[in-house]
Image: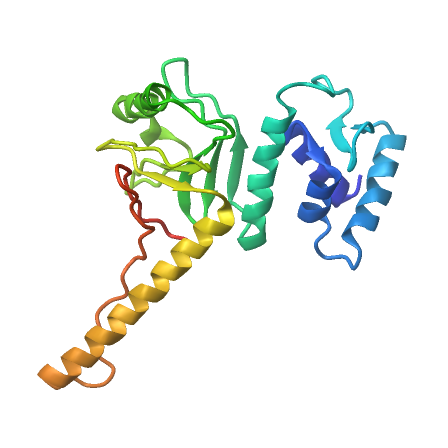
Length: 249
């Protein structure tokens, strides 16, 4: 089997369902006509019995064969939203890890995904609905319960000398007032907003460094190469929401 064919099948297993456009955007970026090339490959994979398609909509949705869920399942929009988040991430940098709906136990959170993105760990929550204050509080309490369990310290991705609890990245059109001393939550509408925010903060940090350099040179007569160490850019803090510091540079 061709390497790209296997990669497509692996992603269909991971995400459960993908649209033709998702597959083209993720696996055919290096060809002149991604959609045309994708259609040819998917037609061959259908012919050979590797994938199935829901042809009742355009573009088609694709599944592994045999299909583990109904083609009209109510969960399909949910899984497609997860694929879309991954697709947005890949435009900037492909995540080192991206696990769909990881399981941590009945007493703990149920994130839509866990990822390592630019060396930073994240739980990903894709909020397609508006949640009440009570429901959101219970969701955060499940994260806190996992934090206090210390089970996260033994995850395979952790380093020996620097145990870190993942950030919670919420992709949401609604800003929630989240209060937690242990869990750092970042709320954005989409991945592009995440990257734009971090890049803007990084530029502001560089400007502050340059201003400090000028002031020090003027007052203390330091050499022109003197400047403060580069600061880690911070995403903005929303009222009632913990801000986070992440490595996306």
